[in-house]
Every structure is written in C-alpha cells, then in structure tokens.
Length: 249
Image (tube, rainbow, N blue to C red; front, side, top):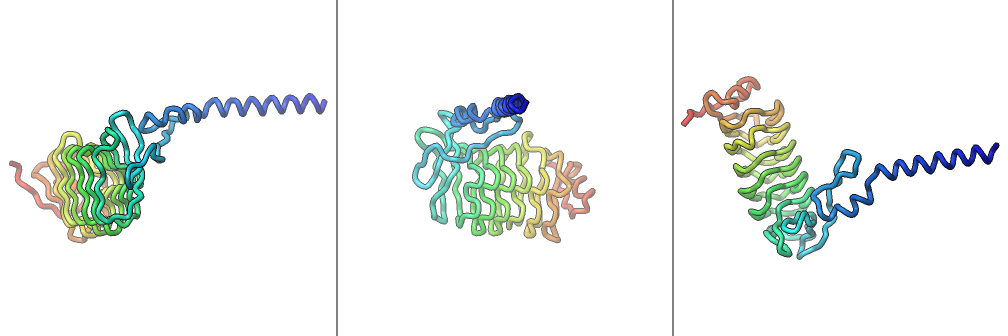
C-alpha cells in the first residue's frame, strides 16, 4: 500500500511541475527578448529588457530592431553628457528606465531621434540644471524627472502624447507652458506634485482633462493661465486655483 501511495504522489508532483513549466513561457522569452522592446511571458505581464546587448563608449545599448536601439546603461562620470544620435548604424530612439537615476550630471543633451523617455530616467539627479526634450518626443515615463531640484525650466514639445504620473514632481520648475496638441489632451496624476517653485502654468485650448492632484502642493501663489471659455478656466475655478484668463485669438 505504501508503494502505491508513494507512486501516486510522485505522479501528481510531476504533473503539477509540468503544468507550471508549460505556462511560464520563460524559454520562449529568452529566445525572443533580443528582438522586441518588451515581451509577454504568457501570464499577462511584460518583461522589460534592461541588460545591454552591446556597449559603445560610456553607454550600453539594447537592440529594439535593426534600425533602433535603446540606451540602457551610462557608465561615465562626466557632468555634461551628450547621448549619441546613432550607434552601429541604428538610431537611438529610447532613453531607458533609470538611465541617469541619482547620477551627478548637470546637463544632458538628448538627440532628436529620441521619442520616449522611460520611468525614473533622470530621477534624483540633484545637480541636473539643463536637459532638452527632443521635438519628436512622444512619451515621458513616470517619475522621469522626479526630485531634480535644480531643474528650473523645461520646454515640452508639441509632439507629446503622454506624460506619466509624477514625471516632473518635486522639481525646481518655476513656470511651464503645456503645448497645444490634438494628441496631448490629458495631464495625469501628480505630474507637477510638490513643485514648490512652480508659480504658473499656461494651458492650451486642447487640454480637456486634468487630474485633481496634478498641481498639488505647488507654490502658495501658483496660478493657471488659460483661454476664456476653455477647460483650463473651469478647472482653475473648480479647484480654487488663482486664474489669469487669456483672450482667444
């Protein structure tokens, strides 16, 4: 009887292991990760690549495809950094997650080929005072510039489609103009949260949704500049924010 019970338990254990392994998709991901920006493991979540495929100078790069790469590693110590436009015949199109996080950089020049800045890319860069956002930029990830205290100004390009949570929170920005764009109509939660120096933001007619806490804990004299009859005016009034109405052209 003991032998029969033992055999049944062994068969059950093997079956459960086989089922778990079959649903993982890990081996499949290892084979395909090199050719995609992110891969699904079959369980409904994505695996974001971080390790570089190759290094060039002070940077490490991950191949997105034959024509595009993402910069994922910065090993340099320079205070003024220029991200390369191309490497090994491919365009640099993505600033990877955590790339400069906490590093002692003062200025970073991003090439015009970049369309995405991923989460925490510049967070806690305490001495960062200057960074350009490329004219073709579409996405700024969550916490991308969080806690960059010395970053006092930023120019947002009209090509933006999405700015994620906390993207510019706790920065030193004093004023900002949201670009007029049919593709960028929403300001997400806490984008400018705890920007204690932020005194004014200019909103275009195209903005149609702003989260309640987008500008929470900004300067005491913070105000919104918005066009007469626009959503920005009603938002300022409903949230008891100082308002300067701009005449429509």
